[in-house]
Image (cartoon, rainbow, N blue to C red; front, side, top):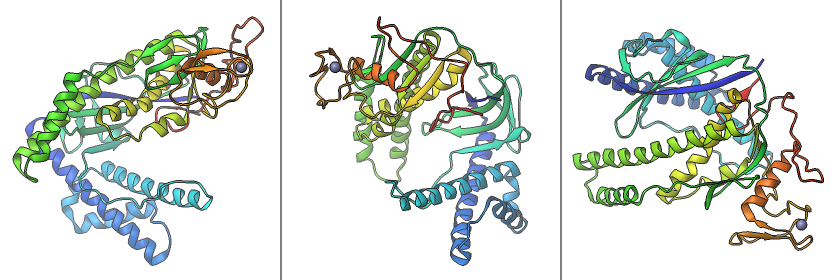
Length: 398
Ligand SMILES: [Zn+2]
C-alpha cells in the first residue's frame, strides 16, 4: 500500500484572547520541553540508559499532579512535546553511532529551548476542522482561511506564529492507495543551479526569478538600523518584526514560483531525476538573498514529490558523483573548472552547455534511461516499485 503524506497551510486569525492563550500554552510547552531535556540528561547520567518516550509520559503524569498549572496543556500537545524531545535524543545517539563508524557528522546535544513558537495536536482528537474555523482544545475556535479542500486522512494540526507575528495553521494528512499511473509524458534529468534555477536534459531552462532589488535594499536598510538599536528595547523589537515581515514576503514570492514551477513540471514529464546531495551542500551561505535561494531547493524537491503522485509522475534523487565531469556523449570523465560554462570533451569532441551535460548525466544515472542509436530516450517502467524519497518530509512511504 502506498501512503502519500501532504500538508496544507492556512493563514489563521486568532482573537486577542486566543492569542494570549496560545502564548501561555507555548510558554508552558517550552518549560515542559526543557524539563524533559533536563530529566533525560539526569536519567542518562544516573543509569546510562535512554529516557524513553514511555518514561517521559509517565514522568509528565506525575509532574502534572504536583504542578496543576500544566493541566492547561492539552494531553496530546504534551505527548507531542515528549515525541519531539525523544526524537531529538534518538538523532543525537544515531549521530554518535555514525561518527564512530567514521562518518563526518556534527554531533550536538539536544539544546534547551529559549522559545517555542508552535503547538502541535497529534491525531484528530485535540482539534476539529470546520468550514472556516479550526477548534483547538483549550484554545477555542480560531478563524482561518480555508482556501483548499482538505483531502485524505487528517493526522496533525500545528498552529504557529511567524517572526513577523502572523499565525498559520498547518494540517498534515495521509492519503492511502493512491494509484500509481504514468502520464506518459517524456522523462528528464534536472540540474539545479545558481545561474539558471534548473536545466532539464531536453534543453529546457528555467530561469531563476530575481528577488527584486527593492526588497533587498529594504532588507539591508532595516538590518543596518536594527544593529544600531538598543538591545532589549522596544524599537529593536519593532525593527525585528519589520525585518521578518519583508523576508517572509520574499519567501512567499519565492514559494509562488516554486509551486507553479513544480506543478508545471510534474504535468509535463512522467519521470524527473535530480541530484540528491547538491541540495544539502548548497545550504551554507551567509548572504541573505542567497540564503533564501538556497533554502528553496529543498522546498522545491518537496513540492515536486508530493505533486508528482497525483500527476502520474515519478521523482527520483540520484547520487551526484561526476555528473558535471562526465561526457554525456561518450562517458569520458575529465575535470571541469567551476567557471567553465561549456563542456568540451577531449575524447569525442562533444561541445555542450555545462548544465545541460550534467542534466543528461543525471537522467542516465537514474538508471532508467538508455539512449538508443537514434538518440531517443527509452521510457522507464513506471509500474515498477515506487521510489522512496530519502531526506524529504513529503516523500512516498510504503
Ligand atoms: Zn565525449
